[in-house]
Length: 388
Ligand SMILES: Cc1cc2nc3c(=O)[nH]c(=O)nc-3n(C[C@H](O)[C@H](O)[C@H](O)COP(=O)(O)OP(=O)(O)OC[C@H]3O[C@@H](n4cnc5c(N)ncnc54)[C@H](O)[C@@H]3O)c2cc1C
Image (tube, rainbow, N blue to C red):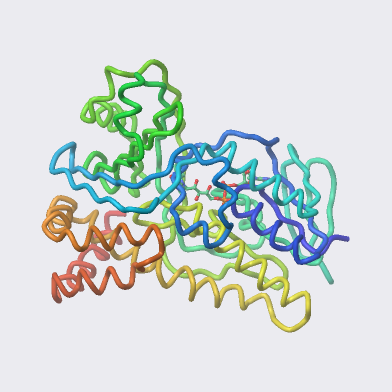
């Protein structure tokens, strides 16, 4: 019998497993894929991740990012810059493999290529059914991503919105790749209720679009149009495209039972404004590891995990949700407002290094926009309720 079984070895699972193993617990982690495995993702890791997983991950970083550019349908450019890196770009196969190896070195027993098909609480423990057999532990961590089998097995009803994304890995002309060196680009208005992104890796340009309006059917068309508008279309040597879903935060949910807790995408903890999920995956996993340690020592109950996630993650994501609703309700107006108020853009940049928070950003915007901000939020919430 293990102390903890972790299901899924993405950033959340690998971090939870590592944190528990280094505290001396017997941990087994199971992933349905063999590593290194491909994962569709922009691979933008904000600098604040360092506060959770340390700085050693930089050995797999492809580029440091100092500058972020924004446009609205290819125009009205805004550029914000920092003296320190605000983000790092990684290829997810390497980044996730690095985190998995780190967990293994800390003593986690790793099972690769075995899908978990069910998880259930029994008297005194948890039973995890995988393709190669049945495993037992005292506790389990569900880190199995967007279509979490652990989440559905627990019966917990999570509040979430599901974003649809189309992500391309492009081999492009060398000159084009170097034009984006050290620089992330976001374009609003290129897809309803979302944005397009251009992230330059070492050898490929990661380009994609994502929309919070899950019903968006014309994603391919928007993607092609985005490539043309950004003057990338004629400069592509080869391209791979991947469609995926990302569950984003849509309000506080219960994320634990007596013996199981959910982390990362399995807990729908991605930022509803930016789609950033890696930071929230490792942060929730870290909190999960800390709470489980105390629970196994007998001086805490697992529901403390919900209390801490609500306080340390959801309180922030709630403001991101409000800003996302307002922005997508009237994107052109919201973009112009940001462009006219450069100090707000500087505050946005500071979010990436955790030198600022969404709640502070909300207060700053409120100071500029007055009570109109609250009215805009109420209207956009109502609109989102009816339109989706
Ligand atoms: C197109 C796209 C672009 C994105 N870009 C960014 C970005 O630039 N920056 C950012 O911060 N976030 C980004 N995100 C979000 C980010 O990818 C996720 O939030 C993050 O991967 C969540 O980590 P996780 O560990 O919770 O889940 P995952 O990374 O999805 O890991 C889940 C793991 O569980 C395994 N698994 C699944 N089911 C089972 C099962 N039944 N049994 C065993 N194992 C299982 C999977 O194989 C996988 O290894 C993007 C997402 C998408 C879709």
